[in-house]
Structures are given as C-alpha cells and as structure tokens.
Length: 369
Image (cartoon, rainbow, N blue to C red; front, side, top):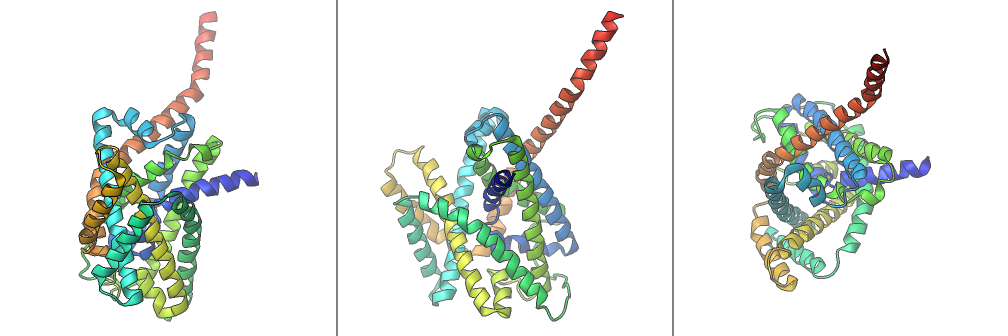
C-alpha cells in the first residue's frame, strides 16, 4: 500500500513539474492569467485544476493501457499524420520559446542579485545553459525531480507565512491591468492548453512508473488538483498586494522579501534553480528536435541557438509570458479538446463494456423462448 502511494506521488510530482516552472512560481503566470479577473480568477483556477486532473487522468491511463513509450506514439495515431506533424512543429517552437522565457527570468534574478545590467545577466544565463547543453543532461533531469517537491513546499510555506503575517486582510480590485483576454473562462482554457503541450510530452514517457491503472489514474488526478491548490495560495498573496506589484517582474519574490529577507533569499535561489532547470530541459528538447532535422553538428548548433536566445530574452520575462504563452494557448487548444474527447470515448467504452453482458443475457433468454 505504501509503495503504491509513493508511486502515485512520484507520478504526480513529475506531472506537476511540467507546470510548476519558474513562470508559475514567480507569480507572473498566475497574475497575468488569473489575478486580473478578481473573483473570476479563483473560478478560473478551479476550472484549470479540474482540467489538469482530467487531462492527467486521460493521458496517463491511455499511456498505461496502450503501453505508449513516447509522445509520437500518442500523437500520430490520435491526430493523424498531417495534424500530428503540425503539432510536432508546435511542440518544437514551444520548447524554444520556454528556453527564451526562462533565460529572461534567470537574467532578471542574476541582475538583481549581483547588480549588473539586465542584458549582461541574460548573456550569463545563456552561456551557463550552453555549457550544460555541450555536456550532459542526465544530472539536470535527476536534479529536477528533487527540486519540484522542494519548490512546492517552498511556495506553500512562503504563502502561508505571508498570509499569517498580514496586518489587514483586504482584496484589492485591479485597475489598469492588461488582462490576457476579456474573461476568466477563456484565460483559464488558454493556461491549461499551453501547459498541456509540454505536460503531454512528459507524461508519454512515464510508462516505467505506471505499474497499475490505479497509479496512472490517481497520479494524474492528484497532480492536477494539487496544482489548483497551490495556484489558489499564490493568487491570494497577489491579491493582497495589488496594485503595488503589477509592474514587478517577479511579484511573489517581491512580496516575500517585504516580510522576511532570509525567506526571500531562499525563495530567490529556488526560483533561479527552477528557471535554470526549465531552460535546460526545454532547450535540450528543442536542440534535439532541430538536430534530428538538419545536418549540423551539435557543437555548432548549440552556440548558434544560444546566441539567438539572448536578444529575444531581452524583451523581458513578463513581456515574453504575456505575448508568447497566449499564442501557444490558442494553438494548443486543439490538443486539449482532443484529449478531453478521448476521455469521453474511454468513458463510453467502459459503460458499454459494463452493459454489454446484460444485453447479451437478455438476447440469449429471448432466443430460448
């Protein structure tokens, strides 16, 4: 029993790691996709949590039952050859975009920590990523499995600390904030859809961890609902400090630093580590996909890609999130609804299997008569 619970938590943690990246932990994604809708933002987070749970359940159960080993085995039989290739191109572009966004975020933290110009800080972050790309990725993957639970506990601990030490409990409506869309429902769907791009890629590689259907189903549900709970805590913190933090690149860090400088320093380290891991893992996937399609040595390709990342990253962390993620949200909407449709088919198939023996028995008795 304990071993099964451990496996469920491991699968849930890996699933959550695809969403709890630096954009989530920094508060930028929550602020831009949810906080701008006041009360509606909380409805949006609850909806997003339900959708994350459903998508995790559907994909992981399908991976377990059909023994799927990678993203291509999941995508092409479901979407077809043409749409499958379009989605494959989208995944490649998304991974490259995440690399730029995470380098921008890491550059912001480095710039503030050692007091250097922002563009030099992004250059340092890109060079560090390049060094890892030229060596080995295995250590980063192992490190990410350790960082995710620490990051979850850090977010919750810091959130409860701020809430417990608030002098006044007031929610401030937001004036003048540019929302992602005109309503919380569309914004919530966009948030889930672009996160599902990388989430499905990761979940399709989890077959070795899915020892039973129960582990697959529970891992997806626990991961999705836990994401919703953490997002609610972050959203409460952001509301308490509106409108002061609207212009902050890393709003959660700004809030924590006001209450406890030591905790703020610890959270800064966690964020930097999360950004670096997200940059390296997404960048590695991007480079692998490009390298498989062009005949260029990785030793040449990697510096070229990292060179392009620097000027793009100088757009800024919040600027990239507000412009890039919604675009992929609309593109990824197809994948999200495709997965939910598969879930309905799975449900109808199970219901048909349950009622089939009853129908057969009735036919058999009628024939005897």
